[in-house]
Image (cartoon, rainbow, N blue to C red):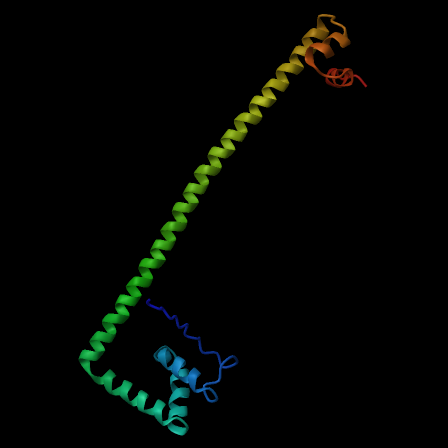
Length: 163
């Protein structure tokens, strides 16, 4: 069974890690040292004063960096990594955009559905109020209007503006 190990390279922050005290931290930081001039200088100082193995690694890296074929391979790898990062960023942006569009569509559809339902209910309510007023204008007793509309006498009086 294959086992996958993941190594998260820590970002150099002088308050959180100390490469002068921890050899493991030195090696982790060495992997990303080319991106930070201050870190590179710190690791070179440590290599010169305390860590001969780190010094060998830095010397080997410098020799390899002088080799044009190694440099080309390194640059090609960096380009591939940058292209991949750009693809992922683009894919994430597109995914967010599509998700927002779908969400808006669903939200609008749901809002429209709710609006139609609310409009329907308000229309029924307005129709009922109009019917109550018309029955009252025809002289029909309030008790009869209440029975016909399935509302209480108090509700009928409220609609008609009594009390």
